Image (cartoon, rainbow, N blue to C red):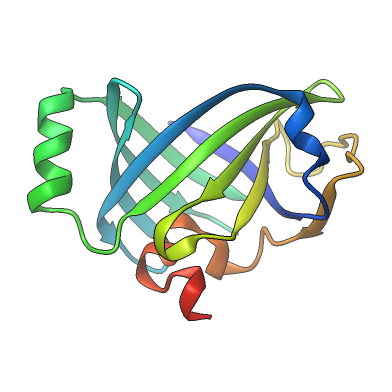
Length: 155
């Protein structure tokens, strides 16, 4: 069983940009986006995956990822995925012994930037960078599945 413990934060500044080690553009579309569960297809660079997530309490989630053929992913995104889709650039930043994934959204979610950190335990302590802002882990509006249903530009 796959588990993910993830916390999400808004950003206070863009000073994190100087520490980016890698960035990748992502497009993802949802096949199911319920209140607690979501199934999506994502293309990142030249790879594609099918992802299934089910939230247990907002921070703790079951997560399963499977690589799929890129041609299948393109066809699913074009013909099957719900609209609108998520378009974002993911930036990787190492800080305080953790990898931060900072998602900079485009399209209908343009202007939204969220930092995520995956932890081993929900109560795990971690060093907070100066650029980190308000925690939004419990705010369902910031889930990608909900951003595809009600984009940031409609708030």
